[in-house]
Image (cartoon, rainbow over all chains, first blue to last red):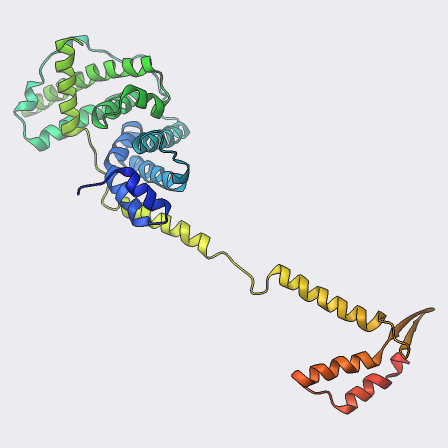
Length: 191
Length: 124
């Protein structure tokens, strides 16, 4: 489906057109869900967080001033909803310490991925990303998937510029490390 | 930015493009829209009384004014109700006039009732 600019739908929603909001949800649901999943690490929680965030966004849409992108505003709601829910559960703290950086991984090719079928590749990549620490997963998703710049990520997460850069650096290395690890496990399983 | 870093960045970008996006359940959007509809529905069906508060106030005011007019209205021919030295003037002609007006529109009082009202010992 070819979507129009977010503002087109927002104006209609503000005039009381609910189907336009359904289109907005359809347009952004995958990224919202992915972002929620990076924090919750659980599909059921991610679904609830995503829905909760979209409801909050609908109820406060009249406060969206269009100074920033709609997605930046929306992801901020998703991030805050996910983090507050996560804090309530007391599962794990958002820490930037003790992240295992695998220096030897940088620059290596992930050759194993080239010979795999698309479905298998997607499954392995998804697994590797899910193994990233929460804050790394969030920042990497926003930077590489949603293509937000560092300033926008600052606005969404409230993290500082230098923190984001560190998380991106660690995230890249850890992702490649996890991919290699999974590929090795796969090969061992085959053998 | 070094060439290694750019290359590494491209690899990461392609990895995310291929497998980074997750999809929610098929009922995701419907669930949100249904919840919004329920919310909106709740606000539409707010209880509203048939007779508003202000209408009740007007009715009460008219009632009080009517009774005050009947009991305290000045009338030279009025017959008083003696309550421990305080006399309430009660003008039966006004009552009759009101009843006659009502009778014209809604119903009629029989002569017997009007006679009773005028001659009850209570008002003498």
